[in-house]
Image 1 (tube, one colour):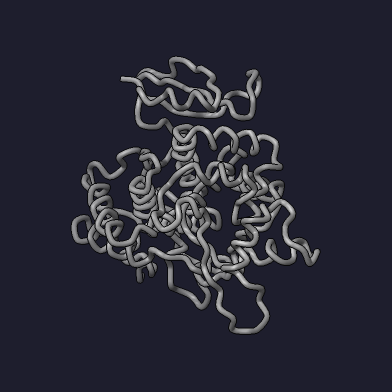
Image 2: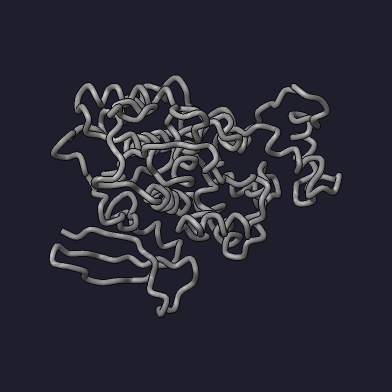
Amino acid sequence: MFKSSLVHVNSSMPHSSLTRCLVLYHKMGRVMCVAFPLLALALLGFMAEVAVAAPPAKLVWHYYNHTCHDVEDYVRHQVSLFYQNDKTIAAKLARLVYSDCFVTGCDASILLDEGPNPEKKAKQNRGLGAFVLIDKIKAVVEARCKGIVSCADILQFAARDALHLAGAPSYPVFGGRKDGLKSDASSVDIPSPSISWQESLAYFNSRGLNVLDMTTLLGAHSLGKTHCSFILDRLYNYNGSGKPDPSLNGTFLNTLRKSCPPKTKLGQRDPLVYLNPESGSSYKFTNTYYQRVLSHEAVLGVDQQLLYGGDAEQITEEFAVGFEDFRRAFAEAMHNMGNIKVLTGNQGEIRQNCRFTNKK
């Protein structure tokens, strides 16, 4: 029986920055490696719905098979129940995973309430949600498999399942993460959504992710909302110029200004606007985000910057016309993000309650 793994090709091989290498493994070892351009990812479905990169050595597919065999079914069922009444959970869980993994790694530290100033209280994490859903899932799992499944793995399972309900692909989540023991808002270095593409890529690179991961993960902005305070600079005072961002479509600029008036006094309301009006209240995962970037109608500055990033622009153009390419790349990118600085083995713990570390 073969299994597949998408990995980066050796730098000595001729390829573009969008090339991936399909490596086939037999139980006796590696069999072959064939380079594919990004668009060819759509042809890999005969092996599985998606193919993803090999995980860190200590993470395992079906990790809980012998200790909590049905855990992913438990998670999927709870996510489905919540999704029926609140479709916003897909966007909320995607943001929660990002806010967790990009800070101290995928250790569920974003879920902690302990300490005078935990990560969730950082200004960059304003508006985070889905904590109640994670609490519910954890309670269900603990009732069936006490002290077995980490909050970090539950968060990864739940995000995958909610995004799949919204239209994203399903993909294997390798398990074995342990939960972190501390959470501090001062460690949160999530950048402003108005940064340049160079700054954005440098940030993703610092987490071991590349331009394809960055461009793909930003596609999570195909659903969800953001506060006006995160885009006021683009609408009224771009780079301190006293003028709007010149890259923003004029008609769309006027639309956004109607929803987001300039801040003129303390205590002024900070409304929410859809990150992708094409998706809007349906919260459907689509590639229209990339079409809006090409039309200069991206809500966040970092999204519009994709047009000025070389390979990022090419990827954006491909995803705008190829939804399946975007879906499959998204599965790999989410998998890659879920592997950032994971705790395994004797590191961390399995929390009894995702909001608090275990009492010693």
